[in-house]
Image (cartoon, rainbow, N blue to C red; front, side, top):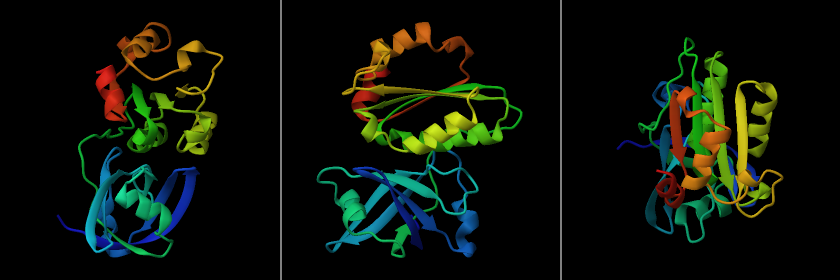
Amino acid sequence: MEFHVVTVAAIEPLTDDAVAVSLEIPPALAEGFAHTPGQHLILRATIDGEDVRRSYSICSVPGAVKPTVGIKHLPGGVFSTYVHEQLKVGDPIEVTHPTGDFTLTPDASNRNHYVAIAAGSGITPVLSMIRSVLEFEPSSMFTLVYGNKDGGSVMFVDELDDLKGRYPSRFSLLHVLSRERHEVELLEGRIDAEKLDRMLNTIIDPAAVAGWYLCGPRGMVDTVT
C-alpha cells in the first residue's frame, strides 16, 4: 500500500462532533486521485509514536480540485480525536489513492431512480453519489433516507438542503430522527426493517428503483438487510 504526502487545505465544522477535511493534492499526483463516487481514502498519521491508519469516504464529486472526507469524532477514537484536536490547515498528512468497490459510476445517458439509506457518517460516500448523479445524469433521480439522532447531528445538512433547492424535482430527502419529534410519524425513530417496509408501501416505489445503496452503523445495516 503506497502513501503520498499531501497538505490539509481546509477543515470545516459540520456538527459538534464532525468535520470535513479537504486535501491539497500536488499536480503531479492529481491523476492518481481521480475517484469513482463511493470510494474512500486511507489516511495515516503518527500519533503518540504509533502508526495509525483509518479509512474515510470521499464526499466530493469526481474532478473536485480538493478531495474532501467527512470525519466524525468517535469517543476513544485515536485518529478521529487527533483530527478534531490537533490537525490544522497546512499540516502534511499521508494518504493513499482512492480505493473501494462500493461505487456508483454516473452515465449521462441513464434515466434511473436511485435510493440510498444512510445513517450518521454513512452519508459521506452517499453524498458523492448524490452530487454526481444530479450533476452528470440529468435525467436521473435520487432519493435519500437519512437517519440521525436530531437535527443538530445531521452531517452536511447545508449541502443537502442546497441540493434539494437546486434539484427539487430530482432529489428527495427524507430525514429520519430518532430523538426528535416530526409531524410525520414515519420519519420518527430509528431506521429499521419495519420502517423501511412502510416507506416502500407509501413513499418509495421499489419497482421503479434502479439502484439501492446502504451505508451506516452495523446495527442499522443488519436491521434492514
